[in-house]
Length: 438
Image (cartoon, one colour):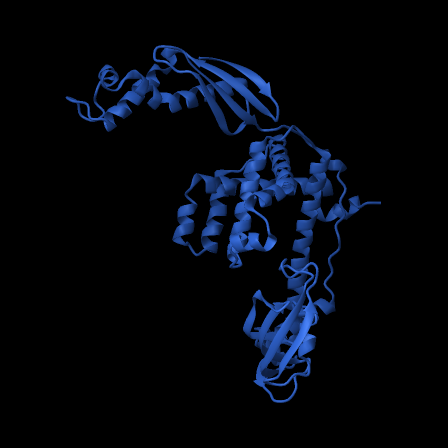
């Protein structure tokens, strides 16, 4: 076997590979055996016909076609190994010459993993923001918990700002009903902001069975694009009015939330809020470090295959997120007035950033000998099993090589992030503030 290499644009190479008949004869024999298992050859049990008999019955070109994939894969791997190439994705194969008893010639165009010259991590400066939870934040959570325990009691008379009103609502624009703008039992808490600014205020002072018509302008940035910035007419009939009684903030209130006293509840909530704030700050800090490392690094031209793969991944993530919210992709696209192709195009810049982040992480791991041990993957898989109560589907998924590869990548990225923070912030990641901007 022989080959030549030609460098192409966009981090690609073209390998011209020639395989002599003697080099692919074993592949032909293996292919003939496979064919004889599927084709009935008189006088022989399946898979037992000699090569020459199979060739006589089915033809040598048929055998070669069967052997084609194995010949290409084997010789391509040898050429890549000989050139010490780090390839990504599947090669594009072009057959140049394929005739029995002659050299087999093909070209393989394949993308290369782009090289990265990393920024000097010790020169990266970030500032850790001190996250303190004040009493007002704790009070807000307590008030939310208090509202969750509120009791609703039907009332006569007019609705006040502390009441809940149930209405039959119909929306229209220029006397044309708005799609999805009909709600026979729409509940409105008058002391909370409504998704349509001004709607709750219109209901203060109404009585049961009262009909009220009014118009409101939807915000320009409203999530329903067909209503954003539009003047919408409302026809509302009041069905019920409820007063809401909330429990007093006492130790008894706290015991219902499995705490000994109101003071204990405040402490638990304060600790939880502090932990959550610190976790969010840690994520922000890691994101800023990675952003600055990417900005300070230089990359070879990134192959389109990487960008395309990342876009596909992002599209899958979008669909999954929509499904979790009970929204179909069709409705989402209709609301945005965009096609799938336009969404893909919108992903380009973010996909490019995500690919660069992955390349940076890979390069840092290579430069620093960061590896993932088998026992670490097993431990990570065990956590997932326990988290899903040994769900059979999860157990089955954790046997798949691609899932295990994803776990390994996750663990490696985690190690890389910790190393980055150590390099930028010192041994203690809490020292980041010492590198704060002037």
